[in-house]
Length: 490
Image (tube, rainbow, N blue to C red; front, side, top):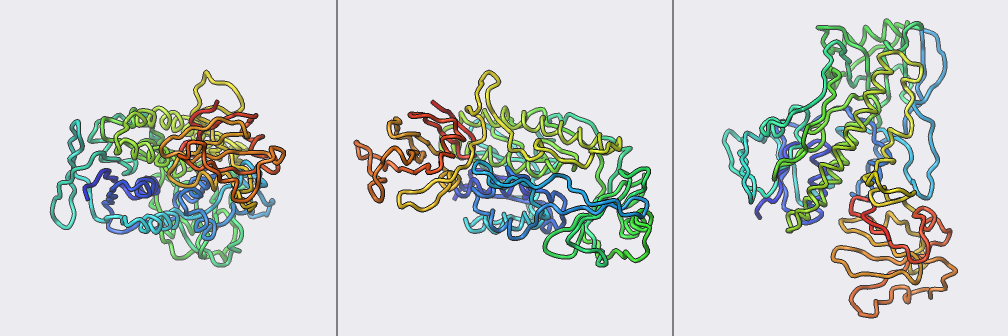
């Protein structure tokens, strides 16, 4: 079967995109130049909006089972215990927002879950396969891949560069990567064991006078490792000995012995945004399009949502409707610029030693991201996130709006018995009724349209949460896009 989409890069962004395409029966290949899969925590914070994406992709249960909530941090300044702190207080779920809190899972484990899900569709990551070059024309992209000591020529309808901040795809296109790199700031990130410490908690060891210059240790689920973060001087390498020195200095203890450094890297403030996310039949996503500071846990999440936005549009283009692709850059580049601003502001607070530098607010959860037209006003308009709500199905069993949305389709919600309906290809239509509407129960709830063309499925908004969340009245109709945002309302 001919490849329709070739994805370069098998991190969270590339895997999400491959999964989005595979479940739409789009022939896809995903290649990765590394010889083995990444093993490290790196982007270990999964934001609430990404949990909603994972719900739709069928991996949420595995992610929740493997991860943990954000840990309580025990702070020690000058060797003295000063209290327990959280980056943000846990929030209770609501009918509209079922997953309101950050979830912690090491990036390599998240990638493993996505790979397993992708394999269910018969697609596997091709390791040790580097993208060497490509040329595009009006009908497709000709790509040269290098693997097994030889070159392979591949023809694809589209090429997506999800190949990281040093993206070969972006560089080949000569797309400017606008922003700044600050070599005066270096941060050590690594995964290490410290068995004397209670793994149920995180730790923050620092000088009393300069708390932001200490070392933070956050427990990683599924083992005994902590992800460590500490400022690193010039020309100092990220070794176990260097980390041990930080702990000895800032904790004031001699019993904390570090071991088993499984991953380490040096991070510099490299804050950049690609000038364009698309050139013809070649597109950029994730770190290839934007790189973030680790502050705020935005990078991995933004990349995953790039892929979630792009997947259904790219599938439509493969099937002959290229018009949707134009909205990918306009929607996601605007979001990336906003998110880079949030991450940069948090980094500045950290560098300046602000007291609230470790606080994380609603703006980091990415639930407020919207593609609405600035000229549109109202509490819920086209481009806004589609809320969840509890319902009952035709048999009286509990169901959620997110259950109706799950899958590669769009969803049309028609509120009230008198709502007008339409037969649109690829759209699942539901009539949302109140108990007072007096719709008959049981099998009669799934009666057909008068034309007999499409089943008319009723769901019951027993407690009124759906009508409230969508600010709906009798006759309101809302089209929810495959990526969980409103396409239109009337």
